[in-house]
Length: 560
Image (cartoon, rainbow, N blue to C red; front, side):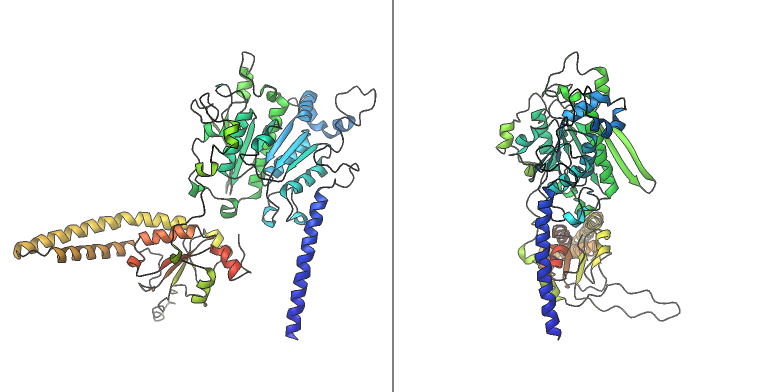
């Protein structure tokens, strides 16, 4: 009976997998079709559903159609837009690099405003973890291309526009071909390599760029290369390299998957990107892209409008706040936009700039040797039962003290941040975030060195007194004694408080993190602290981290 139930369950799982695959294919087909209620036969994403003036009858004397006056009426009456600004929006084209947390809200408002042509570049597919912030995607479109999903949403919002999908990531090889077709670019990516590539290409093609970023509860926004004047023209707007000549340290680049992101924060930054793009287009500034400054342009008013600044958004327990930091103009020695720049579209396409190497993003961390790492399955086999916590509970009042806790056979350190640890962890693991470990071990190093020096001085004094009273020299014994004493002092000084007191000196120390990178750095630091006792104790990590643990040991583990 029980065997039949198992077989029946396996059969149902197989049917579910087949149904999900069929559903995914249907979703992809649906994304290529026009939303319900739009004109028949308008399924090609590179053509508008209806031409912007197709419904204008003979004798119509107004520059916009009746439907356009109705659709865009609320923004037409704004002084900074008007009919002239709306015509500019209708004529303009905008490219979104990224269809995620920034790209979705930005594209929604760009489409709503009536910008005539919208291009979208992204090679990723929709995941369930995207849905709390990437508002153009839905549960039914999980597994579908983000670009197709977003365009399906935008067509439902405004079917009168032209949509161009690029189901790929932007690369040095395709950047020129794609970006050259648009008037303005919105960088909605989340990594320095992409930001430098987008900015360099925009400089070479004289395209204004609106760049934004968001992380946890903070965000920032900056308009770059506006006005997009010729390279070397000091009146042109700064590029991304002018503001950030050097990329951030690789260790400081944390993805949303690792550090987290609050949906409304990234949504706010995306909306602000759309606002800046609409402002630039409606004002007519794009008409001067690629030109050289002259007495007529930019005017003093233009300079005020385009004064480069970095907008910083932050939300704390006191509520959200904005502040603006005034930025300098173009750098005279900028690698990309200065008159001395050697950067060209050809060199870009041929790989003359290695963005991955420039940003320090190399292969996965490989600090430990193979023998210093074990797989999740190996750890689970060696230690099948949960390890004790390593800390004894405080004795109740008026009761005899509890006996000493039993000795541990090992300790597992989880170096993820406490928020990740709180969601799910391996039983018996001790949470010591990598940032805490690095900070405390660095702080402990100074007194350890000082203690070693003092001990060495004391040993030297003792040796000198011994030589005075006993003329026969004993350099080897003295040296060995001094080294051993100093080493012992250093080891004791470097023993961290969070290491369980009931861990024997030879018991192994394992380290685990999210995906197996931070754990190597942590294990290396523990070795540097002398906790491996010169190789007598195993100190290593679990390969692949919690992600691999879920795949190999416990598939119910929530992985974030």
